[in-house]
Image 1 (cartoon, helix red, strand yellow):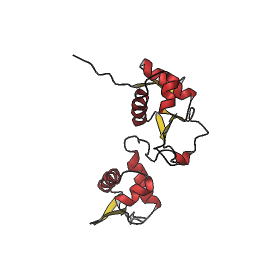
Image 2 (image 1 turned 180 degrees about the horizontal axis):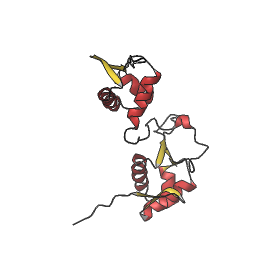
Image 3 (image 1 turned 180 degrees about the vertical axis):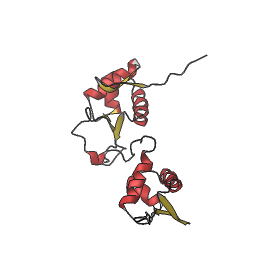
Image 4 (image 1 turned 90 degrees about the vertical axis):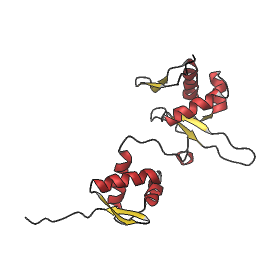
Length: 178
C-alpha cells in the first residue's frame, strides 16, 4: 500500500508566515525568500530540486495563498515565464509592480465576499447584475450571485428582476412612526 503525502505549510509567525514541512519544500521556500520575483526554473536551480517539482509546489502554495504568481510579460516568441514571490507584507518584494500581478484574486475568508457585495450595494444605490458586481469586485459572478441571494434572505438586498437577475439595496425606512 502506498501513501500519498501532501505538502502543507505550518505557520511560524516568529520567522515566516508559513514554513514548509518537507525537505524539498524547505529548500524551495528558502530559495523563494532569497530570490523573490524569480521564475520556477530559477528557484528550482537555487533550491537544488527538480525543475518539474518546483512549479507543482509553487502552484499548491498559490492555492493556499502563501505565494503570488506574477504573469510574465510577453515580448514575442515563446510564452514568458511567471515569477513567484511570498505573499506577506514582511516578505513581499518592493520591486514587484503590483499592476503586473496575476489577475486571479486572492482567496477570501468565509463570508468576506458577502461583506464586499453588501458594501458595493451600499456605495452604489442602483440595480446590478451579479456579473456587473463580479467584474467591479474582480470576483466570480456565480459567487457574487450566491452572496446576493444571502443578502436577499437577510433583508439587506432585493431582487429587482428575475430575467436578467438584478439586485439593489433594500429600501431602508428612514423614519418610523411611533
